[in-house]
Image (cartoon, rainbow, N blue to C red; front, side, top):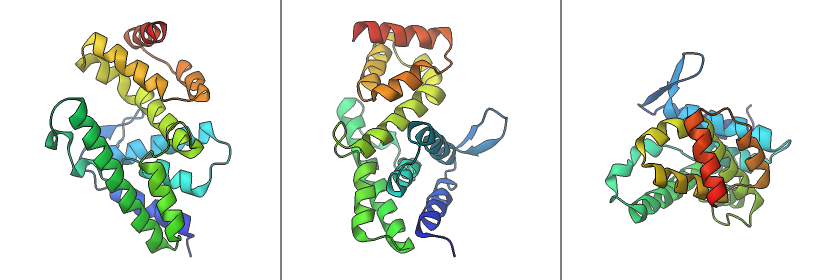
Length: 196
């Protein structure tokens, strides 16, 4: 009989696998986008923590749960629209994950704690929320930064890097600086850090 933890991760990944959008991996294979994102999140958590607790592992795996169901385009343009969309996504992912956990045998308190991590309540004060944020920032810098930087105005991109950097722990900074980057991205990071 699978444990509550195994049941929950299986249920989360089954929902990720429903993402109709696909992404290519380094080895040429493709995966549903959110399943690839979730696996990358979990891989970074392994590098950040030698023994993360189950609830943090679940939260990290579920952070973008079914994100494609509510596209960014459903919200107004601009920062307020973006922040509202992101908040709503966190609430929905937290609620869905908490239900999956209860169904698998976790207590209401454990399920709600995981939802709180997913919603990023207490960033800067809660070490589990910080760990999730570190994973998200590292996944962005490693996998999406280069493409993103080609679509965004240079000065805006510098501000994005500065804001991303400001949300990361010292440990995550060290890991980020060791990432391989093309010349453009490396220059953006250098400029952002010199200007912060």
